[in-house]
Structures are given as structure tokens and as C-alpha cells.
Length: 396
Image 1: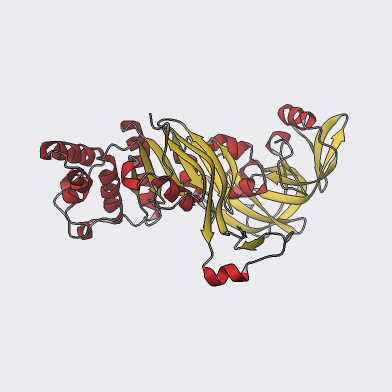
Image 2: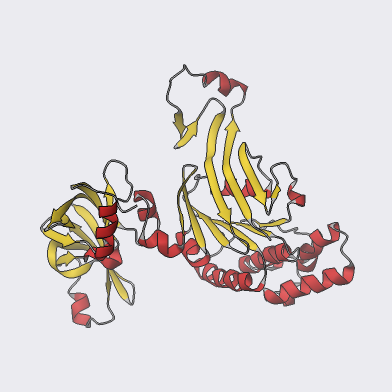
């Protein structure tokens, strides 16, 4: 069983001697911030109170902007970074002080980390040779992995003769020949072009179905997170913001950060909206539009005893409809094939609409050109209402 449990994991990078003298504070002083990371007497806190239970064979994706602590968390799991506080279990074994080579994990790095003087075969066989695995078993495992990853024809080549996508396949093959309990992947596709990234995402999904291991995958690309993960862990400034399935974090973002981070184009935010009650039901008011919320949202808001208040209203671009409603003027018209992305100036702000062209004539699409006047609205079941004070979803 390759379950993982992370209990109150924290990573603190200590100051050097000179910094420590500078950072001495009086009692009661508030903790400082450095690049939005907390600074304590012990040092800079890169990962804060990280708690996560990972099931056997689950695919977990850690996602967030640069500097949020996701790669640091992965490196602590790998044993490449010391855990400052908390406990890490692989299965039932506490591994805080266990050497990386004894954790039964494999890691795929962003820069491939292949040995340039070795052939593909030798790169993939290297870890097994260090374990003194019999030659016939090494040969069998390397060829099986090469077949899975469609790199059999490259086994005699050296890395410099391969493309970026082929090198990444070799790096993944080197990891899977060891049959690790846990596979760690640190932004493995970030060096590839868009087409190759799409292909490799599909390859990783196929690979996951063929090998029995637990995956922990780090990326800053929310498309990778949404397509690969069973669950997504969204991080910011060392803190977990939300854990959930791709559908959960898309449909029910916990706070403003998650709402704007997940989804492309990002969710429209209106900070001039009001949450009111009309005939005993919750509704949102925005400009000249009043929209009654869905029954599901009514129940959640009522359960939280939410009062009428000014709110930040979130609506995804693909959920906004052209029709009677709030007026605006098209500034930018981006034709995307099956849809057109409109940047509309309305209420003194930029509002993005994604309009399907599937049932539109050419003349109707052309009518949405730059400078065109449009009106838009949205149904109640797609509205997200966030507290102006805390930024937290009022349904949460």
C-alpha cells in the first residue's frame, strides 16, 4: 500500500547569522512578510501547516503560482529537503529521517536530469544496476518500460540525439523501471512546447492506468492540474487554499484566489454587487440586473445564515449570455474557432465573455466586432458570491 500522510508539515528556511541579528523583534510585533511568505524568529516559512491524506494509487496535483511552496513540499516528500516541523508517513512508516534512497520513491525532474554520456538504455537501467539487480531482470524491465512509453527505437541513442518530448519519456521510463511506491513529478512538461505538452499529458494518463503506483505531480499550469488530477491541492504563499476534485474546485471555489486561479479565461469579478433577499429568496444585484440564485445556493446560504450585504460577485466568462441586461461595448474580439472571446467595457471595467459560435451565422459573429454595443446577463446557478471582507465564498 502506497498511502501517504502529511501531518502539519512545515518548512522554514533559517536565517544566516547576520540576518538573524537583523530579524530580532520585540515581543508582540507582527510577523513580517517577504514575497508574501511569513518571516518568523526561526526564518522564512515556505510551507505552512500542510495536511493531506493521499490514497493508494491516487493522482494528486499540487498547483499554484511560482513561490507558493509546491515544489518545496514535493522535495520534502522525496527527502531532498529537511522537514522543519510535522510528520510524513509513507504507508505506516514515519519517514522524516529516512534517506531518499530508502523511501521507495522515484522523481521526474523538470530538466530531465539524464546522464549525457549514457545511452537511453543505460540511463533507464542505472538505478537497477546500483541495486545489483540481475542483468536479465534489468533487461526485461527496461524493455517493458520502453514499450509502454514508445521509446524502444531510441534505446541505443544518447540524450543529445533526442527531442525534448523523447528525453522526458526517458526520464519517466528511468523512474518507472524501479516500480516505486510513489512517483513524484516536478513540472515535467514545462520545457515542452504546447503541442508536445498536450501529447505528454495524454501519455501520463495512459501510463497511470498501466502502473500501480501513487502519483504526486507539481505544476503551475492549471490545465495540467484539471486534466491529470484525481484531486487538486491549490496553494498560495505556503498555505493550502483548497483541496478537491477538478470539478469541485471549478464549480465551488473556496475563495477569490481559487476562483480566479482555476479556469481559462479567469472568472469575472464584480466588486460592486449586492446580495439581497427578494420575496424571501437570495438574489444578486449588479447594475440594472437582479438575478435570483438557484435552489442549491439558496440552501447553502440559508444554512450559513448569510445576511444581505455588499459582495464580490464571480461569473465565469463561458456562463455569461448575450441578451437583455447590462450594457457594454466590445473592445476586443478574439475568434477562437468554435467560440469568440469578447472583452467588453461595462460598468467601468473589463468583462470577458466566451460566446459559442456553433449556432451563429457569419453575420451574427461579425456583428460582435470591436465597437459593437452588447447587453449581457447570467443565470442564478452560475453566480459565486464572496465576502468583501474575507474573500471566502459565502456558500462555503
